[in-house]
Image (cartoon, one colour):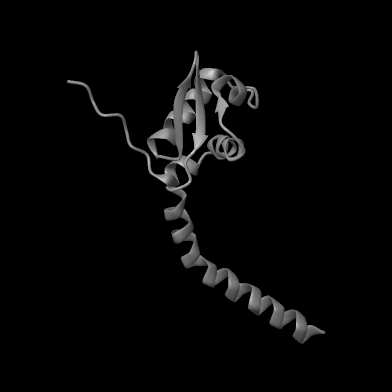
Length: 107
């Protein structure tokens, strides 16, 4: 009996800097594995594994184009990340307000 491939969530998928770079490249246009691999010092196989994790998280889609497979960014799953980060913006804004107050007070 074959095991289902592990399903990654968005947070796991973007945890790696290589995968974040792949997303950045794919944000501009659809790219083949050969083109994507040319941006890294790792093997094509390693890049393919990273793409597999991104695809498992729903962040990347692919389609066959002749002999090549083209990868594209899927932005919908990034909404969950955006919503999670929005909660923490209140803390950033608060810190910036305190910094502004302290700087102005020192002047």
